[in-house]
Length: 346
Ligand code: PEP
Ligand code: MN
Image 1 (cartoon, rainbow, N blue to C red):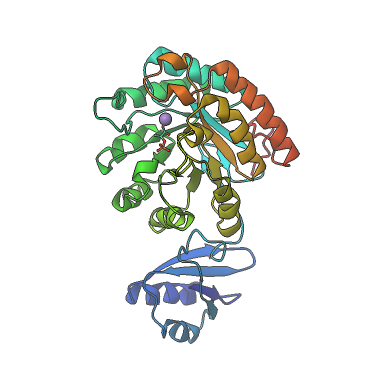
Image 2: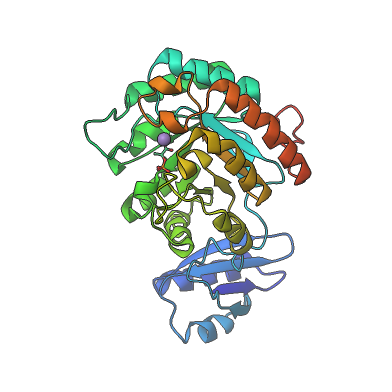
């Protein structure tokens, strides 16, 4: 439910509404706008609540939110959310490319990739330090050392860093080093992890679960938003279908649909979405054309020798080609590539 606050309300009236919600075990999430102030109410709303609230002096009226997801819906917030990741805005009228290795493997590897993707125009660096692997015998990441290497790459290139958090155990450590915390597909419905990551005070990059419906994906975002953290970026990374010719089936529909029903930024991951390096460029371009605010792409200096996801990793040369094409498509779509040099200060 949305509580519409009267124009010219007093702080006491506003606080009285927040207090009433708390008393009945609900949480109020205010959006204080120039024109209008509203409070999104989440929790088990009971039938008499609207009448109760509408008798309060600061309240103009109430409107139900029909979607099952609340705080992520456009009914709650009509205008696009822009998430600021260490100075890089994601969700505005620009396109942003996050690139880097699947896993941080060594200092030489991560620095080489960071330099190459920066030179090609990427705005953020990705790299896994804690890796979810299907087999426990596969390379599972350099852990803390990996975080240190990402920070060294950020230091040199200025690129903000995103990396995955797999467990509540590691949140504090990772939040110390990273600029954005990634929830991977395998943890997209790990509800306790979503809540705890939400509380870490960093933007959250939320991957779609391997078998999550779009509604379940938005409800996963809801767990983060409910903590008071408004900085969630949705990432379509493909879902499991009957198709085996590609690793996953990247659901372009989800990009366009989430943009319609939610105010949250949406990016796409054509690397995991296809599993094949040769498909990363065409599918990535399609995602930008479908309205994605950006892409996250795996790049490796020597994909044949990568310790994870080599088959879907681009060489730096192929990544530069993708950047050139993506820049053209982004321009056609009226959402040019973000560049700090040309950004208008907010
Ligand atoms: C990754 O980004 O390297 C990753 C493991 O992604 P996903 O969780 O989407 O499989
Ligand atoms: Mn990967």
